[in-house]
Figure 1: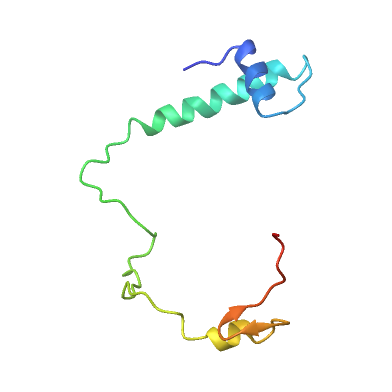
Figure 2 (figure 1 turned 180 degrees about the vertical axis):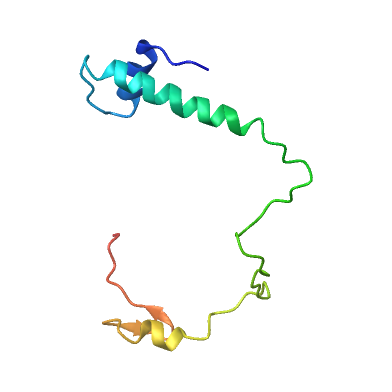
Length: 95
């Protein structure tokens, strides 16, 4: 894929980047070089390669998916100016 000068101006406009006319040819070359590198990645054979979650093999830490109050409700409301039980008390704002 090749980027022309009109596309460079459009990308700059969409990215809200101020680009002068003198900078357009330089940016065009840089964008074309980046796209050429990305096209090289398509040539790599990745069949048989499993997706990774990390560069080092490790098991993901998991917890039970259960509903709870967190066990720290008293700590959560401890700094509130007013509270009733485990709920924040706020002034009425709707009449």
